[in-house]
Length: 325
Image (cartoon, rainbow, N blue to C red; front, side, top):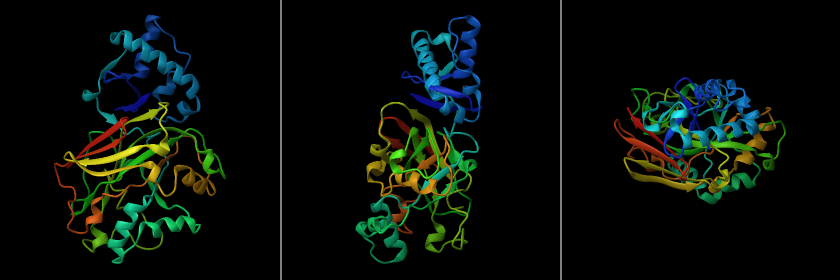
């Protein structure tokens, strides 16, 4: 099942034929015609916050399954439009979602980037050894306001000359808690994520973006600095620890890997963060990115330019497309 965020944050149900059903509008229309009465509060699908939907997922899923069956038999019975004609918001839990982003979480990418930045060879084995030595995962918090949806134009501040892509997987928690173990991970769904990044400051160009031990992470959190979508994939039997991921820029493959190659699994991240804060249903984690980001090519790499089309592909479940402005 694939759930989208419509322009007004209403829940959209993606059909196999490519149409997207406006769930609350369709349920109200069906109730008026007495064709189908949902056992689920329509407001669950109208709210800008998906947390109640996640908490009531068992009954909500039954309603969505029945709605999909009706739409498949008679598309005119529901309110829908082709996905290609629908403007979608990013499928995050809410406009104020809490999103924890992992950093340097694929050994091949981390080793290549660190070798370039530190100007000495860092091996993948050295990167992985940090986990074996007991060091925790690290990362940053994503500002929801920085996230663009599928099809949106993404662009960094005007002074940026090194604009990079990073293919990632974002998962949404079905359940939370405090002091959890890796085995406690309970993922509700996943979506494709592009952790767009400013690299200028790394190579001494432009003005400093951050300084100090604690940083603002503005090289990640600028307007349109993240993108995700096109939808949240829920209950399709995918293993979030075995998702294929890739990046294409103007049709050319730049990255190709799997979440199986994460140094710290989503469960590891869950355990570390929940030792400090209580996690909630709807909180999101991103995976980090594998080798192939432009930073690994140095200051003269093929960074993104206006007009470039970037596609993040997560298996056969979701392709996120954005154009650079």
